[in-house]
Every structure is written in structure tokens, then in C-alpha cells.
Length: 347
Ligand code: A2P
Ligand code: 11C
Image (cartoon, rainbow, N blue to C red; front, side, top):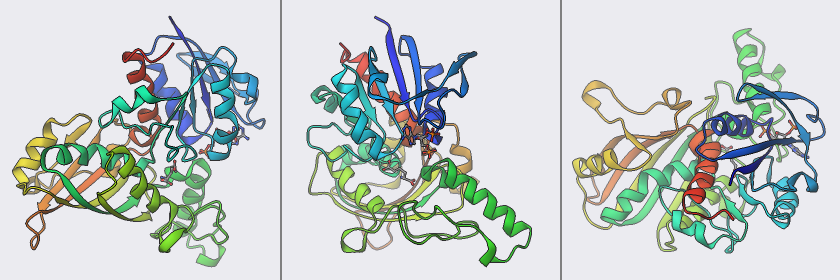
């Protein structure tokens, strides 16, 4: 049977990528609905060469919909995902709203596809910085065990949405025009929901999302809590520092791990060269290592700079890069839907 699909947040940074990916999806499509706010209703976009009209999101938008891909913010998911489920749709939600709900699977298809079987209508897509870390580390965990992860991120501005990207572009223009710093506009970053705003252009901001318990930001807690849920292991020690840098797309991560069994660099390289969704780019002799710019538009997670910690036999460092809008968001969401289809999980 062919499927009716709805994209919620069709005009957003992630929604736009979802539309592009859906054009080449293996899902058997019948109709596709493009939903956004009242502001966008009536605007047009192109899908598979045909002009389509964006509709305002209302509860009845989901009548007859089999699959709804949500990426319009946590508040919208909280309100409308249950409406979609009530009307018989399966929801793949890209926001943080349902992620830690025990009745909601949190899935990276390369890591824990079996969790999809337990869904109750909603499946959560993990945070972008968590997803790429899981793709790189799960093969290592399987082969050598994983006791500890310490990660520092270098995250792109597209993770904060279209308006944040515009803000960075304007600040960059201001810098190049020698405009004094106190005349630059900062109204969104580091976080739309917080009180103070700082420029990102030619800067690095050690805040993504709002501050929460113990001096960690929500983005850092997401990496900690989501890792334990996806790997189904509460005992893994995880700590994170999340930093926004003036890159448009492609999140980079410096990851330190401690394995249970000792692993050599060659063993980790061999493992990751075969791992699903991973591209190994690791040849210091040729200056080969992953770069954010090269990751843009690709579905894979790129791993390099693999090296042992000089003082800890079971410690190793990796540099992990992926397109945050694709594997971190739109592609992982659609990949969840395609995996569910292959598993026969759509009624
Ligand atoms: P709109 O463009 O109509 O505001 P981004 O993450 O790039 O900021 O995009 C957010 C997405 O969420 C956009 O598609 C936006 O639509 C959508 N959105 C925001 N608020 C609402 C709302 N109240 N109802 C439906 N969609 C919304
Ligand atoms: C960022 N990781 O790069 C965030 C965006 O929990 O889905 C995704 C927030 C989330 O800003």
C-alpha cells in the first residue's frame, strides 16, 4: 500500500532537507502534505518537479496520514504529535520533547533498530550531536566495551534554525564592513529561549540551549542522557561540553573514550572502515581527516584522528563529523521511517 506523508515544519532548516530526501526515498509515496505555521500557509514549494502549496498545521491536517515527520519545535510536537497518532499516523519526532519518555523509542537505525518494534505511535529522533557520536562509537562498544565518553562539540549554526543562520551571516557582513562590535545585532544566539544574546561571528560560544542542573546546558544533558538510552546502558560514564562555532552546517566532535578491553588504533580503524553509516577519513601522513565543509550534503558520519591516549592504555581520541541537518536530523528521521517500512511496522 502506498503511503500518505506529512512534513511538519516544512519551511524550516530541517524540513527543507526532509523534503529533498523524501524526493529520493524508498518509501512508496502516495500523497505528501507540507505543513507549517499560518505565516507560511499558501506559499508554494517544489516537490518532484511539481508545485505544492504549504498548509497551516491544524489537528485535522493528519486525517488519512500514515507517517508524519515533525521538526517545528518541541511545543508543536507536544501539542500536535498526539493529534496525529489519534488519527492513525506514525510520528517520527525530531524535537527533544518525547525523547526521554520510556514509552517512546529513541532510535539511530545503525545502532538500535529493534527498539522500533516497541513504539506506541511516536518515535523520537535523537539530538544531532548524539546521533553522530552513536554511529561512531557503537561498533567500538560492541567489539571492545565502552566505560567512559568525554566529548567536546564544535557545532554548526544550522542546528539553531534558519533565523540563526541569517543572524550569523549578517554579523559576518558587519565584521567584513568594519562595523564596530557594539553595533552588531544578536537576538537569537546562543539560544532563542534565553535572556542574553551574543554574536557568533568570529567567536565560539560555550552554550547551546539553556543552562540546567550542575552547570551543564540542556544540549550537554541531551548527549549524556540520550547516549545511555540508545546504548541501553545506564553505567556508561558520559560527560559533554557543547560549543557553537561559526560554521554553517556540519557538527564536529572531539571524543575521548575509555574501552573495557584494550584496542589498538589499527583495530579501531579496521572496525570503523566496515561500520554502517561510517566513512573512515584517517591518514595523518596525507593530512586526511574529517572536515565540516566536506560533510555537508552527505548522509554518513566521518571519523578520523584516531589515536591512543598517551597515558591511558584503554583511552583513545576520535574526531567525528557529520551534517547535522542530514544524519543529525532529516536523514535519521527518514531512515527511521524507511527502516520501519522494511520491518513491516506500518499498518
Ligand atoms: P514557519 O516558516 O511557517 O514559521 P527553523 O527550525 O528553521 O526555525 O524552522 C522552524 C519550522 O517550524 C518552520 O517550518 C516553521 O514554520 C515551523 N513552525 C514554527 N511555528 C509553527 C507553528 N505554530 N505551527 C506550525 N509550524 C510552525
Ligand atoms: C543544535 N543540537 O545544534 C541542537 C539542535 O534537541 O533537537 C537540535 C535540538 C534538539 O543547536
